[in-house]
Length: 133
Image (cartoon, rainbow, N blue to C red):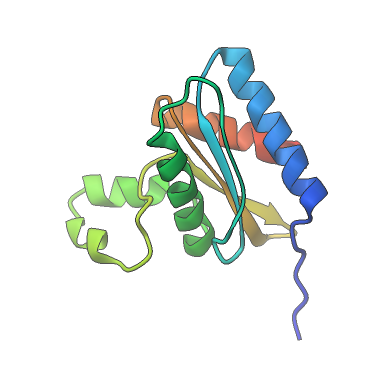
């Protein structure tokens, strides 16, 4: 039987604090979502000034990244490259850059999704949060 690490609340808080600090340091108003390996929401925060819609997009990006086991940008690139049929895949509704998987010993244990600024900046914030682990 295979054993896998799991995110604990302290891990989630550490990731969220680092992502928030990175965003605030750049003056970016975003929403930050953290999910477990199954895409279930563990954390959601909307920074002051962030768009209400960002609080919907961030969890969707994280969910897609966790279930797909890769950055959500991969799916955005596939769709932009002409594979529009991917839009019909069930449960993959956050197919924009900004969702980044959390890897521990090569296994996906969750993901961070960020929304509110340019997609590449969203991903930057997510990666800064994950780096705190």
